[in-house]
Amino acid sequence: MSMFREHWIGGLSSYSVFFLLSLVVTISVSISYGLSFDWNPTISMNPVEIIGCFVVALLFGLFPDVDIKSRSQKVFYSVLFVLNCSLILIFQMYLESALLGLFAMLPILSKHRGWTHSKISMILLPSLFLVIPLYAEYSGYGIGWEELPVIFDTLVEYENLPETFHSGIAFYVAGLIGYASHLYLDGILFRSRKSQRRKKRAN
Image 1 (tube, rainbow, N blue to C red):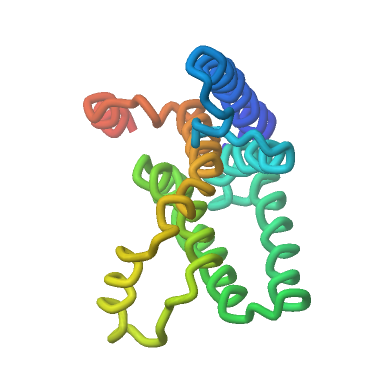
Image 2: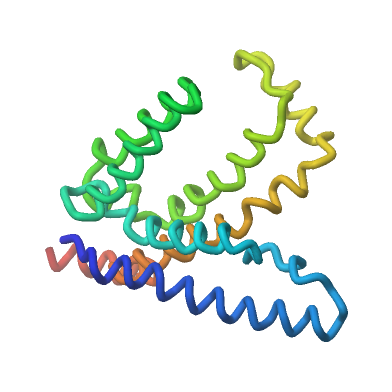
């Protein structure tokens, strides 16, 4: 059963606590050691990016329940619809739009509390925010699977690779925290294998 209110509040409140603590640490260290305020990659000092991180935390706090008919599903697919229309009509990024549509179908094909409620997904899905900046900045992509080794080699030698990843870390952390808050509220994040076996026997 979806807990829409609990999950969006959980995502926002969890990230708010993290952001405030990280902000205090960032400012304290910067003042103490004379560093610039952007030394901490886990949060952004850009107001627009800060708002974006809170939105990401909110959406990822809702995301796992897209595999069932719920308010979370309506919110997420509404966002994906607007994004997909923008990719097609404004940016004319047809391949990206097709990939987004393909990804959007995956939760519907799975059972409730399937892969969307797994800890592996919690870690991997937010990594899109590490890949997207690289895709946007790096121009050395080839066409065809046979060129993957060449692409990998050139990526390793890409001079701006650390800076490009750096730009996505804050969003990755926001997504991770939002996702983790959902799994925590569903009793999945810290559930042991023993308790899972006990629950299966009870059913």
